Image 1: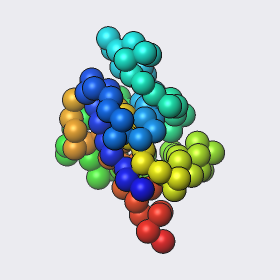
Image 2: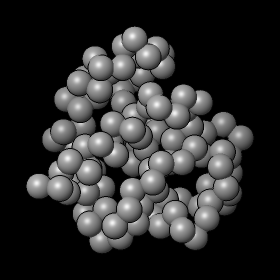
Image 3: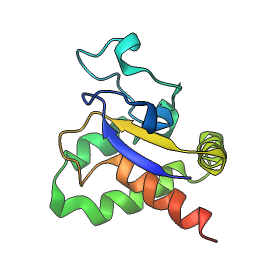
Image 4: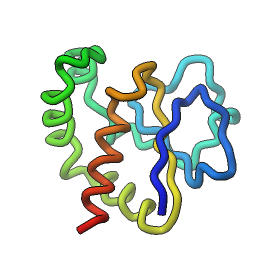
Length: 117
């Protein structure tokens, strides 16, 4: 089991495993065919309000992580995501330019922690 992160603008590869879009908004300029997604888990993405508040400001990163986890912790899509990770390789696909400070990073850390228990 491997969890990868990949920007939506990077080419899909067979080694990605199941490709899961974890953004609320569809990435600009990407067709559904080119995205090669297994699922779009938009309900797991940060709320519009949280996304706008954060605005990818690294100074807000710790608080963003806390608030975002509070948003997704009881959503059924989270169980679906964890189950997929247990079954094989997954790739969390996101559109953000900032590769270190985005919702996919938070989801990956949560899944890894959950699966290590």
